[in-house]
Structures are given as structure tokens and as C-alpha cells.
Length: 126
Image 1 (cartoon, rainbow, N blue to C red):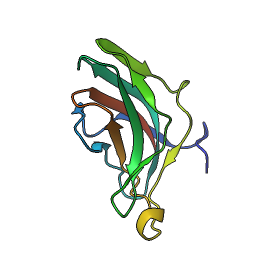
Image 2: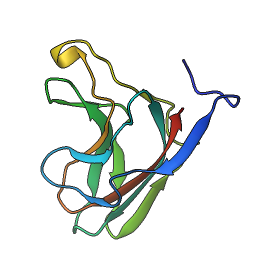
Image 3: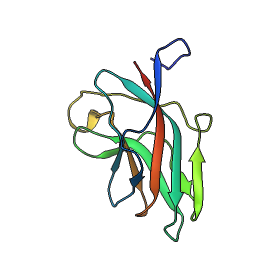
């Protein structure tokens, strides 16, 4: 069900805080039990020496990264910010199907480079 203005929504920062990208998917927010969420803001600071592409997504129950938002280019030496108006409305929720068809609902970032600092804000349906 899509997010609407009359729903009870909780706006909060990603509960993993500031996350520095590594070679694999890095946890940005753990989805509380019984809730779903939408990412409303992505902030990334890139001082790696080169432009880096990041993807925001979740993991399958088999442990593979699954992108939920389009790729975002983080320009070197810049603070890169994407707001609710610029991000597609994708709902992160637990999907209990088996293996690669199921999703954990937790929010992860995956980057083409190591060392980008990323933080998010979310709206959780409560």
C-alpha cells in the first residue's frame, strides 16, 4: 500500500548513523519488526579522489544485494544530497519468500568505491 498523508508515519535518521562504504553492501537502516519504510533523503560525502556511484537497496534472503533506488553519482569533494522530491517512492518491507525472491527490508548501500560517507533519512509506516 502506498504512503499517504493520513497514515501514521515516523520520520527518523537511518539507525546505523554515518556509514563509510566498503567493498560490499553496508547497512544503513535496520527495519523494525512490523513496519515498512521509504527512504526520504540520501546524503553522501565523497573525498576518495574519484567520482563514485552508490546504490541503495536491500538484501535478498539468500544474501545478495538488490537495488531499490536508481544509481546515484557522488561527485568527488562534494556533499551530495538527494531529497524526497528527487527519490522514487519505493517501499522497503520484509518479503518472506524463499531465497533470492525474499527480501530482508533492511536498507543497504553498495558503492563502486571505498570511503564514501553515507547517511539516510526514512519515513516508517507505523
